[in-house]
Image (cartoon, rainbow, N blue to C red; front, side, top):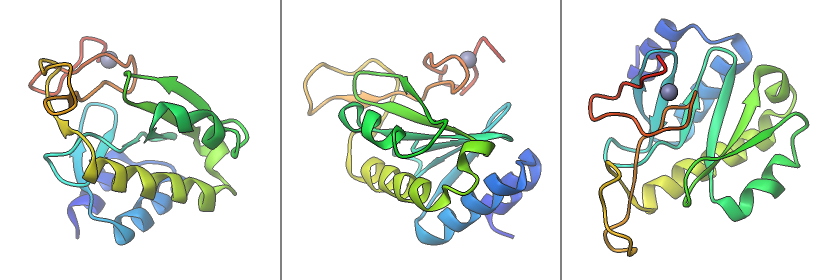
Length: 154
Ligand SMILES: [Zn+2]
């Protein structure tokens, strides 16, 4: 069993979410992290989070200028403007159902972007691009996680 499959077994997402994420894992390297109510995916552990997997929804990282257009392609998609550098397209299981191909494009692009963009880090970096880092956020309240990966809202 892969790392990803083991973590999905533990999370128990609904089938449409599970199948989608397993397929994503066959198309791109993913480093999964099991947190309180979700699994986060990033290209490698040095990279920022690309996709959050919940039992009944997924959240896909996207650049803020691209968020509106991407969300408009999927009925029921919502946008969260999480940080100046990153927005997230939120898809419930119902929104994902039947729209897997478009969502797959977005999720794959998110992994590719995170693999080539800013590094992961606590929000202590400088303001210029050379030292900028992207913090890990809680996908429930969208505040920055502590170094241990926990959030006060858990
Ligand atoms: Zn939180």
